[in-house]
Image (tube, rainbow, N blue to C red; front, side, top):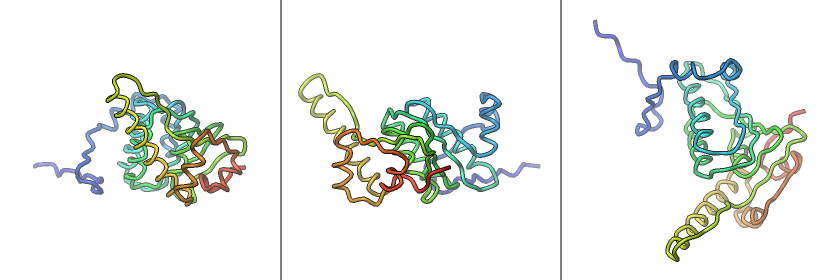
Length: 203
């Protein structure tokens, strides 16, 4: 008898086909990571890069593939990093069928703050002594004149894209966001709460 194929739970976007063998990939996690994952807690520690993004994305997809459906908690302590890696995580946060809450511990700067604010509404938190910082994308242009122009356009593209997202997440107008991110803008947890980056302070 032919075995019935399991229906893929991911029907939200047909173009994205999940090919991970989740059970095999789990053997690469240490016991602490396994325990946290079983409680639907995903640490996002360190600078944003391809490795960090892959790790976080894999865990979100794994938890989405389970039968049970409940909120996932993303614990963030990051100085920021690669914009493209951060946007990849954002896409999976939006794609996830399980709502993703976010919480900052210690520091959420740049893409760390961006990801913190991208969490589930009323589920974005911070510990009292955390610091949160937003700013425009950083980058230096070098090479031929045409290369410099191309790189400058790319930086401007990301600046507008991230500013529009932050405007949506914080409910502030775009002009305010563009002005506030022109320089490093550091905030305490209370200031971030008032700004709209988070919804609660965890005592």
